[in-house]
Amino acid sequence: MNGTRTEDRLKASRPPSRYPCWGKDPVNAVFIRAPRITDIGADVETLAVFEDRPVLVRQKNMLACSFHPELVGETRLHAYFLDMVTEAKAAS
Image (cartoon, one colour):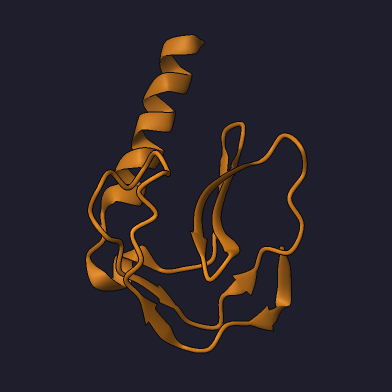
């Protein structure tokens, strides 16, 4: 991640439906001075893309996100994170 480059304030309503945490409905994502994900390693999974750039990635038990789902009442990312916690607890 590059924390020195920032996104302009914008709202996106593109449905990244091919990604596991969204389902079929569009996502309303708010970007406010968000870090830009510029490099992705081989073991990093891209979970969401906006304007051909990754905005949500996962590596093992870690998530990195370039937007603020909580500002618009978007709870699917939080639910996805809780599912990750549940899976990790079950595996241990």
